[in-house]
Image (cartoon, rainbow, N blue to C red):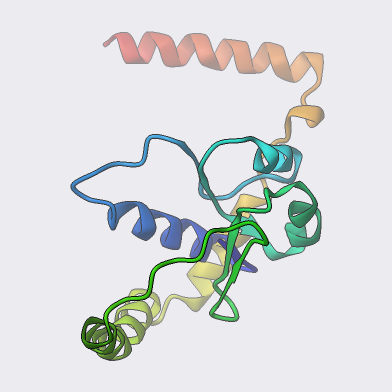
Length: 157
């Protein structure tokens, strides 16, 4: 999944995973794939990953030729060059599904974000505040270890 909004990526990845119920996804699942982990896209395994639009060009270099890319901003689906063709839905079911999606999907999405545009923008900005592994100094590592010890004590209770 690809989008400018990291919040939207996370929400859509979670929705996609929930659609598998009663089954569950047991493979690689990273709702917001950081740039430094893009090489995971070349791994020979199934995955569901959310990719920031700014990382798309680099991600395409890493992605398997069987990869399916869903652009959430444009509402497009691109099949990889080696992706097997999906079977067609029977026309009656396809018509019913399209009708229901047209009626409900937009309303559900709008309701989930109604009046939250500023909150969503702030949440997206928070994704970029995380410390990257290459930014951790030796001193930071010690603080992290101390916090880890404290977390262990809290979890023991």
